Amino acid sequence: MNNKKLLFIVNVDQFFISHRLPIALKAMEMGFEVHLLCTITDRAEYLESFGLIVHPFLFSRSGMNILGELLCVINLYKQVKYINPEIVHLVTIKAVLYGGIVARLIKVPGVVSAISGLGFLFVERKGLVPRMRLSMVCFLYRLAMGHPNQKVILQNPTDMKSLISAGGLSEEKVKLIRGSGVDLQDYPMWPEVGGVPVVVMASRLLKDKGVLEFVEAARIIKGKSIEARFQLIGEPDLGNPESVSCELVQSWNDTGIVECLGFRSDIAVLFAQAHIVTLPSYYGEGLPKVLIEAAACGRTVITTDMPGCRDAIESDISGILVPARDAKKLAGAIERLITDVVLRQQMGREGRILAEREFSIDKVVATHLGIYQELLVTLND
Image (cartoon, rainbow, N blue to C red):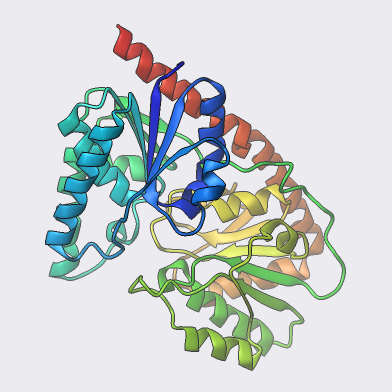
């Protein structure tokens, strides 16, 4: 691997740091020259301190301006051709689609496409416009998945079936990896604290992440005079049409329905102080990192019976599944775990066991390095 160039293409630096940095650092130890091409916020100096070669690149959020997206692809082509990597590792949907097409045009020797969820377009939506958008995305996936020396990392089998049925993916290219991994030392399991039970949701504050259902479940629980605190961790994503407004979040906080904590980087600390973690998402997840973190901390999870979410737990062993968009069922599951301390703590212990077996960052990193080696071996054959 000495002197081989590995290029990560990601939408934004913060996502790379939270989901892929350990893989990049290990690749450097193995002899790769590692490059990162992404939208840069304020983390360029931090990333460069590890020895990464950073290439600022602006990915638009909406993708609705056709001319702007075409210019994005052209500029991406120029950048990748200049860097001239042996392997490109594409992460997040736009990077996977545009980067996959560019890699085929340039004939990059090896491609890794990491798809951490298919997003809202693959969730059933009515109307002509959503169907047209889905058809266009499926067409782009077919173009992006056609490289002859390519591995596609998916996080759950439902996404695999969806892409194969869309005609954009052959099964021999697929590698299933359950999530982005978690450092078990950074997310230790602590005994539950005493006092009023704390129920936490940590997510971007999008409607299809289930934030409205979480707030309604809090209303239902409090309406029964059941003692509990509800904490909402995260911020609105105002560039996303599914985002809730800042004013609505402030009203929840002001009325005391939930405690809105905003963006926090100390998730392990907050989970250690919580009793239940929930993510009632119907977004189209890969395998939500927050559920992996909750399991590592030994906290019982309540999530939806949706692709990705259901793959992050062992149902009725390490957590509880509820139907999507159903605040009453969510409230019922929360009430069950608030009142049954023995069940809650047993599920939490099972979650930690699951995390140690499946979600360790060391296991995830080793699997990725194996994929890189496989692609390089193919080149030498």
